[in-house]
Image (spheres, rainbow, N blue to C red):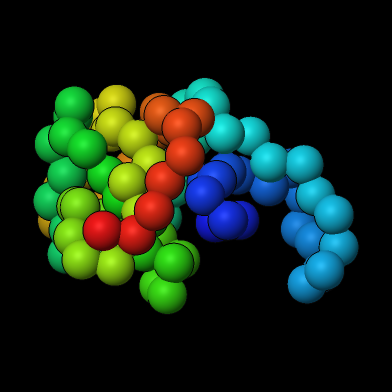
Length: 89
């Protein structure tokens, strides 16, 4: 989830307006498009419209680095979050 300049993984499902703690660092399994091919060590960005990570691109928020490769057909990728402020490219 993107909140201002922060990207993080919520600790629980929260309703709009409800407070939730987010983790801004660490390794997480995140959704990705099945057609995206992401190499281990590649930078990834969050697509806030699709609610998934992908390669960096216009309108996406840089959030971290893939720690495992995820090829065509895979719907998730392990990502280490950078824990730094982000803004859409």
